[in-house]
Image (cartoon, rainbow, N blue to C red; front, side, top):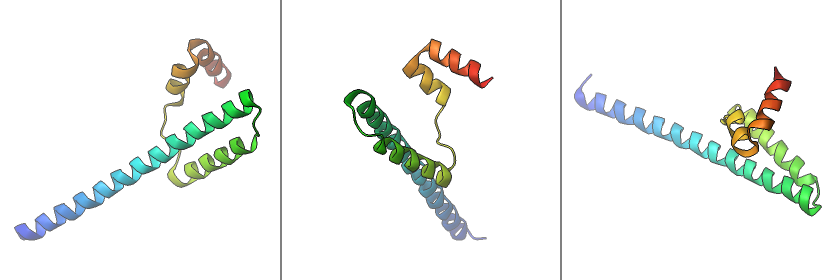
Length: 97
């Protein structure tokens, strides 16, 4: 294989890898936006008397996202700990054991 052929191969591989990284990043951003919307919808339902329909719709969108891209790439226990504190995480971990 000549130097030029090898250089073309390396560039093509790099472009493909870059596209894959961008695609993964876009999927992660989409999931993050869905979680943000879910939080807003739950707050609106619980505190403002809003409908449950937006919560169901966003949960279905998250299910579809997980089906298409695999599990959402979040450390759920860490996120729960940051938001809810030690007491809730300890109680939740006890229920799953």
